[in-house]
Amino acid sequence: MTIQGQDTLIVGAGLAGLALARELAQADRRVTVLDKARGVSGRSSTRRIGEARLDHGARFFTARGERTNAFVQEGLAAGWLAEWTRSVPKWEAGRVTQEGGNHPRYVAPAGMNTLGRELSKGVEIRTGAQVVRLTKTGTGWRVDCQDGRAFTASRLVLNLPAPQIVPLLAGTDIDGSPLQAVQIDPCWAVGAVLNHDIAGADWPALRVQEHPALEWIAREHTKRRLAPELIGHPPALMLHARADWTRAHLQDAQAEVEASLLTMAREIALGLDVAASFAHRWLYATPTERYPEAFGWLPEQQLGWCGDWCTPDEHGPRIEAALLSGWGLAKELVASGL
Ligand SMILES: Cc1cc2nc3c(=O)[nH]c(=O)nc-3n(C[C@H](O)[C@H](O)[C@H](O)COP(=O)(O)OP(=O)(O)OC[C@H]3O[C@@H](n4cnc5c(N)ncnc54)[C@H](O)[C@@H]3O)c2cc1C
Image 1 (spheres, protein in one colour):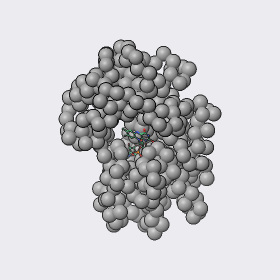
Image 2 (cartoon, helix red, strand yellow):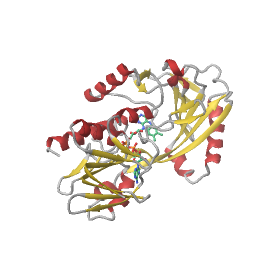
Image 3 (cartoon, protein in one colour):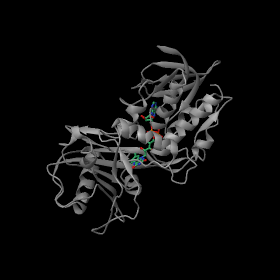
Image 4 (tube, helix red, strand yellow):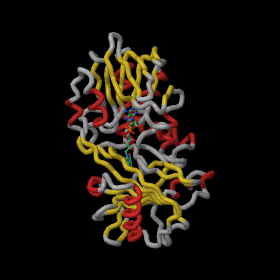
């Protein structure tokens, strides 16, 4: 089945792709977003175990720019966003110390995938659409999915981590070399629902320092309880492993990783009593070598790309960079009449 007639196809319903799609839809462009996952929001994601919701991707987000602050105000006013904390303490060798900074960290109390859901309102989305082939046609682009669906459009934007774009471009005559330099670290994430909260813990999260495996431990229920309807959310922890540890354990079985990280977390958060847990491997979590511009656009090819790994910003890849990337490309396309 071939679905035709779109102005723009966006592959990847991450926050950059959705920010772009929302702008184009609001400017009356016909746009469709394809994503291989069952839902939207990409790495800004939330996993459910029973009643519990755990942010196994993005932990929170910060807003420095004017445009991002307006988005934050929109979320705060509507109630799907809340300020979580102004300080995330550090843990090192058994000692917890407060950090010096004092800037707001925002979360969606219902889970970080709310960001994608909010951005996708009014946008046509096709989920379960894993793109396997891109073909340049006489009038634009054809995109083939693994399940046999095909889409055509005048222009194409790729909102995938760059290492996943490179093999797709290999089948075209587009030079993918500017994307080959982009490097993205992996991350093992383990979520756990607890039988009871950690005794004496008063922190929302800990930035774990100088530890062989862990870099982040969050008490997820401190986010959930910002929403009146989630006040009874069970205590739950999210653990993120360091990139070097993840790389060394990339092929380990999920159960093994779960057991190892929970054992190490028990040494930090004493008395951890786990009721249920899961492990998730992010092959592409944190960009370390990025594309130097906020987005890519090749007018002669009618092809572009966006994502958190496209940023000239000194604060680096993060949710705000993804949003700015999508909004930046939208501005370029609308201004050039596309
Ligand atoms: C563990 C972790 C912790 C993080 N912590 C923070 C934090 O605290 N603060 C912060 O600001 N940011 C954080 N981030 C980063 C943040 O999640 C990202 O910056 C942001 O979500 C990236 O959005 P994006 O639009 O660039 O792409 P992505 O979210 O990567 O979206 C890409 C989309 O493409 C889809 N896709 C991939 N291949 C295909 C295909 N072949 N066909 C169709 N669809 C495909 C994927 O399913 C995905 O939905 C964290 C990320 C991780 C993984």
